[in-house]
Image (tube, rainbow, N blue to C red; front, side, top):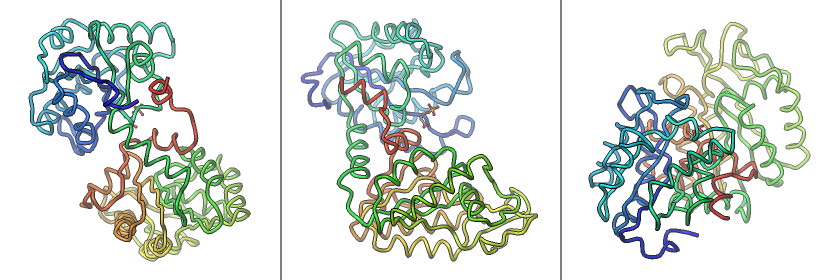
Amino acid sequence: KTLNDLGDVRGRTVLVRSDLNVPLDGTRITDDGRIRASAPTISTLAERGARVVVVAHLGRPKGAPDPKYTLAPVAARLSEVLGRPVAFATDTVGQEARAAVEGLGEGEVALLENLRFNAGETSKDDAERGAFADALVALLGADGAYVGDGFGAVHRKHASVYDVPQRVPHVAGGLVEAEVEVLKRLTTQTERPYVVVLGGSKVSDKLGVIDNLLGVMQSGDKLLVGGGMLFTFLKAQGHEVGKSLLEEDQLETVTGYLQRAQESGVELVLPVDIVAATAFAADADPQVVPAQAIPADRLGLDIGPESGALFASKLADARTVFWNGPMGVFEMEPYAGGTRAVAQALADATSRGALTVVGGGDSAAAVRALGFDESSFGHISTGGGASLEYLEGKTLPGLQALEA
Ligand code: 3PG
């Protein structure tokens, strides 16, 4: 069910679970993508006259208030993006929250303090989580409703994601609806050739998704591997990787993937050159070296220019592209070239009419940090772990609860 199924919301108190978990430098928001993506649902409800109570988490505080993780800066930015005031409550289910909710008129918006300042939000204990969910529901009054719109958190079995919708009328918000629709197209009725680009530091974070995608992908599809995880692939092929990131305990699994790809006709493409440095620093003498001959005293921090061109050529005829994870340490300019090349190749694919999806907090932040316009991509997912788990074929607690 979606927003329209809520019917008339005028005067009703509607709890919106958004994902406003944005990167911060102190109190400065360095990427407001998730706030902007969450705004339309909140605006729609406000325009329809609902009393809108937004709840969200920030970072991973330990179940108690921690000023480092206050949502106060997010409330200020949300208000700017919405173009309307946002009342900020300095607690989540206490006196401040109750007062903020009571003070809401029709079409007004409040944001409550970080859900994770309360141990019940993330508790593994059903009763403890349930008690916190009850406290959230108690804020709403008799005709309250719940809108699940925090796509980035739907893989978490948390009170605000999983337990609250079991207690009140609930629907999916516009963002969750849009995300699910796009991700579905990456697993069913996918137009081919289908090219998946995976990066990021650890292969152990991507095992489930590689496993499932190798089941979905067919002969002629391609899997391009960059980022820190590529070195475990190179090593599995018998190459030395110097001081590069290596997950020895995944070598056997990765060898299995190489074999499976070969058997199914999926082309698994690894970089041919690497930008390698003497240390994890921008000024550590970065040099382009062959991927198969990384010097023993160097570590790879990006894919090289030839690999960028190779990856772009592999994307040239793609009809569907999913990209998760930067190709290198893009935050440092000497190691940003690979990520930039892949982003450009996706942008080119978009203008040719391919469906291009950028998934994952890091890759989404990367394309924005590198100056790409969001319209260069078919869809930029607000989910990191959530979009990966969706593609792994897992049941996501937040979606399961909304469907019930
Ligand atoms: C994310 O950033 O992926 C989501 O907001 C979920 O955050 P979490 O990994 O701390 O649960």
